[in-house]
Amino acid sequence: MSIKVFKNAHSALEKLLKGLIAENNQEPQKIHDLLRLASEALIENLQLEVKTLMRELDSIYMSTRYPDEFEAIYGKLDQVEAERVLAETKRTFKWLEKKIK
Image 1 (cartoon, rainbow, N blue to C red):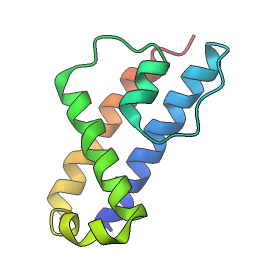
Image 2 (spheres, rainbow, N blue to C red; image 1 turned 30 degrees about the vertical axis):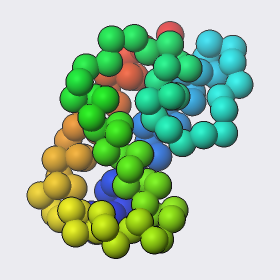
Image 3 (spheres, rainbow, N blue to C red; image 1 turned 90 degrees about the horizontal axis):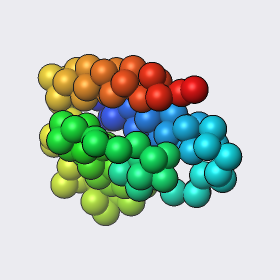
């Protein structure tokens, strides 16, 4: 179950960031890097915990796309970690939603 939480958390933040970019009359790039998307969406002053979450989600997302790296990270994906990431993603999502005009 936990791998789905990580992938869905990444996807939710990615889509919201791309929506914010589109809202600024820009075409979002076809990338998955959450920090780059946040920068393109003109999100300033990201808190350290948000940056850390985005880096973590990017890392896990990339490892699921490239199976050679998946084994190294799979051991870190337990239920407790999934619940933590889900809670942090929800907080970040709500914060980003407030930036929608």
